[in-house]
Image (cartoon, helix red, strand yellow):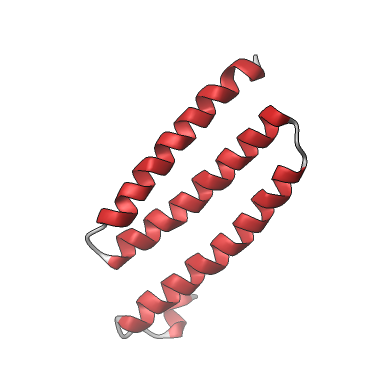
Length: 94
């Protein structure tokens, strides 16, 4: 059952990657682009996890962890930049 569902999941993730890429390029504001980039890395790591399940390669999951750490740091950095560019304070971050 799993072997039949995983190709459809991979196609759905590829479609989501395409739509996130469109939002990243056409986003009217900077915060839309940051949100699209955040969603893009989450979908990318989900796709890599699905591909790891289909191939049975355990090294794909190490790639998922690396993308998750880098994506988190990138999102926090972009959020701090947006807050500072609008005149906010670091206390607003929590």
